Image 1 (cartoon, rainbow, N blue to C red):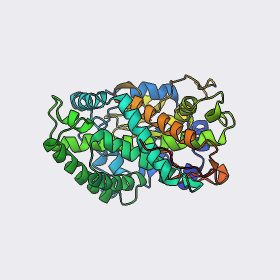
Image 2: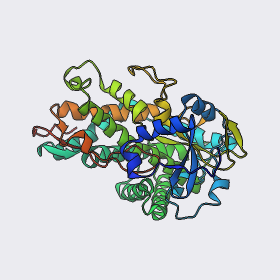
Image 3: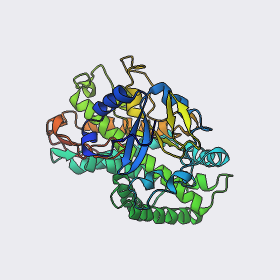
Length: 398
């Protein structure tokens, strides 16, 4: 695939409005891989074929995740640079360093008590639901999914409220690609403060466990592990909750599930992870030399981006039903697969169930066609999810 081929812009509002149409058109024109732009003047190859993606994700030797040669030619104000640049963490490292960082992170996450986490999600959910249940209206992005994901992650990390607020502001700028450079600085400062706080005041939390791992991570390395956890634990978690709620609200197959319908929240989550995964295009690699793949030459040191959304809907593997099906690529596969997927799944399911149990008559406040999706090359994210429901009394606080 020649770098001179004009790339399809996947950062625009038009793409966000109907990405699956764009994936179909790219597949028809290019096959399993297509030239795209992640931002103006930032070319990449988007992988649309499921089997091609699995081969790439399981071949870190030819497709390492280290972007340093690529980013050397990228302006510092590039809006996608903070999401793609090298950091000393598992997501952007290869070989021995990747293993070192991943082992520390996996150990930190493995210590999370899932029963305790479920209780924490329920507690946060009840408090948030009580803040709007008497109103009869809410925006489930602003009023529920974002604050829930944010508060639950901060509890897992043992992060004080004042540090958490600064971290959230920084990450919002990075994901939106607006003021991303300043957002990067805000986030780094907040996470450095969290690292120093936990070195002096350790607790039963993920941050303390990573700090105590035999890998012996430095303060700088800790900042970047925490940045990865914030990146995965807030925005994608929010999107998974919201996209699942949207499916439950608009699809007749799920319409009665809260009141005993045949398809469950778990089924809805699985379908969203196939069709509208919270990170639609990610799992980025940077081949160190040109690679011939499916009759395409992938250029050296240029990003290869896996479209989980397109691969999951690849007609070559699409077989129909989703119930009990976990073959999607939403969590990635191979050495860089998400180590926190069981926790993310638990949080999303509990968040959805708590809301639907409390407000079973909830419905969209506008036609689904009027909902708008936030532009950006990586996420699948609604701007808002306005709903109406019969006002209800507050739930008992835990």
